[in-house]
Figure 1 (spheres, protein in one colour):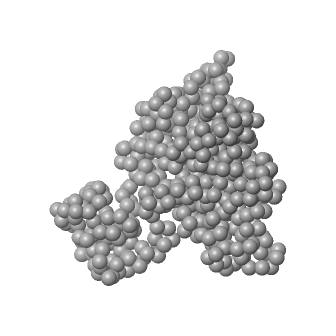
Figure 2: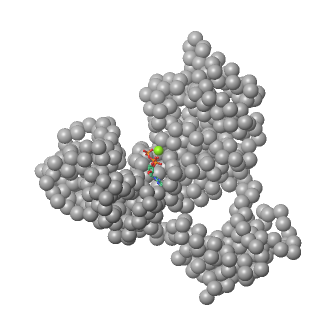
Figure 3: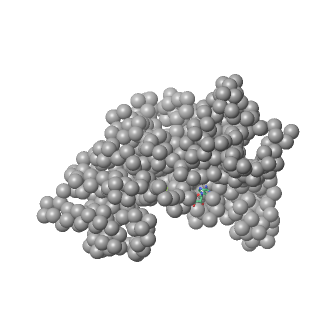
Length: 524
Ligand SMILES: Nc1ncnc2c1ncn2[C@@H]1O[C@H](COP(=O)(O)OP(=O)(O)OP(=O)(O)O)[C@@H](O)[C@H]1O
Ligand SMILES: [Mg+2]
């Protein structure tokens, strides 16, 4: 499976896990468009933590299970006990964990804790008057029980978190988010990661002051890839097919996909098909054709995805006719204001404003500086051609998303992981030569160091910050604090920073005896 970058998001998850292990529970929510790579990111993290001793991760996809309180509780508890069973080396067909009778019978082999939990679930489900409120509440309490019996921290990863809201349709439940909130309040050893694609709904749940989960999760947006990462992903796909593709078509794939990883994948795969069928190299023309095939032909995957997103987005919205009229206006001209839209429609701003609100809630449209845009430029293109039958011939406008991407690049100043790795090994060799010590990565007991090596009883520890921004006080302080938690006495601390240090950082380094070896590492 090809997996590209998401270094920042992986690091955030790693950091949340580390903090949890150290006793500082933090919850994180990832929010991003459909197919932007949320599940892949979570699965990658799970894989990395599969054998962690001090942490048990449980992945639960709420999409199919939050359909009724009964199904939800059975699956929620089943997934947790399944994860526990795997940790204890008890292997059974996973399906068995989702049947209360089977669960009860296999639990005896898993442990006393599993047995108690499945017994309670079984009994509660078989009461004459089933109390679903209590059962759901009990399900939310199960991770903490595992913490206590297994003596391990638990990280519960809830994919498609917004789907929990379906349970609010059941009168016994009331507000499922407040049951969840009450449940997690006392669980200081259980960390939660939520992920969801219903962007405005997720933001409501975590950001609005009336919501029971207000400010309980740190929100992280998952954004499209940078140009560099999109090209890397497409190149990896072509490499699998033994195809050499030069930068012009690769750049074009980025332009047409605006870095949406699923679109990059679909277009690159389509290019492979076309170039095989035509026995031609993958040229810019092939990319253009592939894009058109993908977006406009009936069976194009992008077309199917747009169709799906469009239908579920407007499904909930009242007054679909008027809504289409607004989309029609925006498909012709984006980036216009409420009054401009109203004028074009010859309608009062009040009515249009309400419709725009629905469109914002449906995630089809975004507002930036009081101007309205499609969230997804490809969906705009598809909608114009396939639903609205507009005969406009416009170059796809990526300006809004481009903004998001450059914002991302500026904010996190990251380099691609591939580049980072090559650079890292180059730096490592130079630092090894300079210090005369063999160095490797260090990742033990929740502590990670970029480079670590021992010589004559002295631990040589090196921190590297390879960004276009001076390393600050906080980063040096973090490094020094981390070192203090190491069970070693004699240390030599070195720091490499691509863009130098701030004055305060330098002062702290002097006080703490951290040596700046950036010049030696770069070899200039
Ligand atoms: N980091 C990545 N590296 C390579 N490919 C990726 C990456 N992220 C996403 N993709 C591509 O995009 C597709 C969609 O990813 P994924 O299923 O993780 O998205 P999602 O955000 O969970 O979508 P949904 O909202 O539909 O649940 C993947 O099947 C893969 O082809
Ligand atoms: Mg997903």
